[in-house]
Image 1: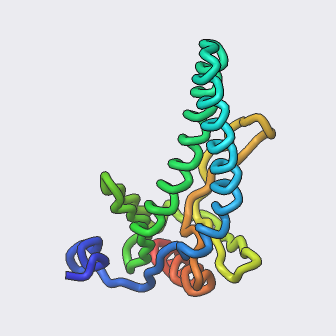
Image 2: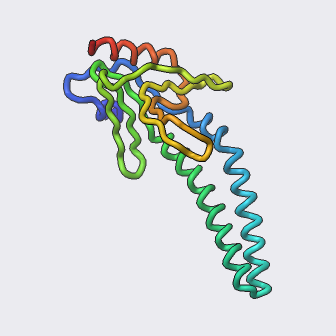
Image 3: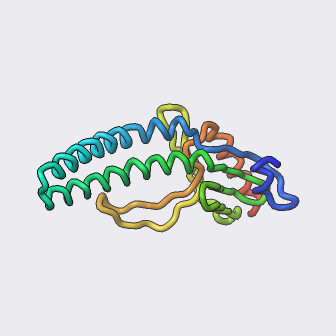
Length: 171
């Protein structure tokens, strides 16, 4: 059975489907992983040198930096692995974002949930199709608006057309 078929409800018709471009995601995360890898390597050297000298505070701080570097490397790796297991669907009844990595997470959006549809193009040809704008929140750079949609897809115009047709079908 095709994994996409398992996401469809009885009687539902698939209009469009896609997935994140994993190569694009790797390219976007490469600089983070490189920086984190260098940071982790230097932290390991520092931790080893501190252990040789036997200074407790220095060992503790070095191990803290090793933990931070490890966390960043692993977090970026997890993002890439999750993207490989992500599917985007537009059916005649709803839009779906399904991530089947570790614990399956399926988000379903009814036509009434679809807001203004935006395409955010990237230099490499892929794009994000944003169709749900949630509440604003504050972070250290100022006000942000959380968005949801199909991230890093290769056919953004087809996805946008399918979403527009779905949104129109409800009203």
